[in-house]
Image (cartoon, rainbow, N blue to C red):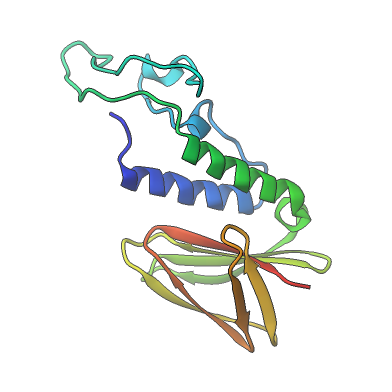
Length: 177
């Protein structure tokens, strides 16, 4: 079945992690376009393109099962999100080759924060995997200013950053020079 809005939010959170974490990210065919499907034969559907119209998916790949009548479209908003994160990774050396440090791992709150640094370039990534809004305090080594890479919002802290993250969300904070 077509992913729910909640499932799409989780997909975006996973992508944010994937594009900022250590290693080479991999995008499975069609994920960036909003395609779905897992079991054979739905794991290799024809690619969805923005300039075409498609029939709704009405039948389940297994004849004895039923499914909802799902509209098939190219997800431009999701595609733009992928492009922004890929561009950020491409343009930021710390996200491609930088050293990695865990800054916070809070299992109870389901919050994880890490830093990536390459020379004077510093990035902090904070991920809230919980179903609730979470307040996060990160200790800094002095006064610093960061810019949220996705919104442009400026975040400042003298010895700590105090952040409020919505449910199933993340922040990418790039240190201002």
